Length: 117
Image (cartoon, rainbow, N blue to C red; front, side, top):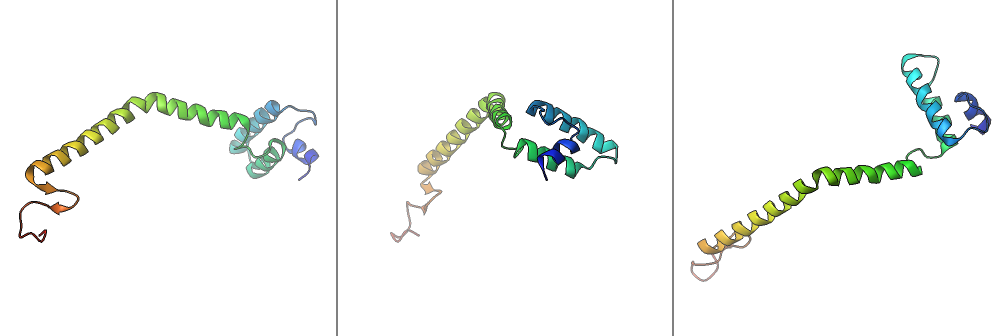
């Protein structure tokens, strides 16, 4: 694919900005879903050729970090509470097993005939 062909497929002028290329691609992709005159695969190839790898653009990296920040903002308290509850549960299991003479990791330590059974 050539640069001229990519601009022709996206129906753009040769000096179009990246923002205009992205908007035009999105509009034509919507039309391709309802109209058989546009080929989605060909639109994507032209778009990828002009923009580069669309998943590695600066805006997509920024959006990825934004999504992570949003995830931590909305779920941070739940994650912290879950870790605390899990640590407390492990602590109490170990504490109760030591009081009863059972070790959940190594079997029965107390009692027996000295052979560890």
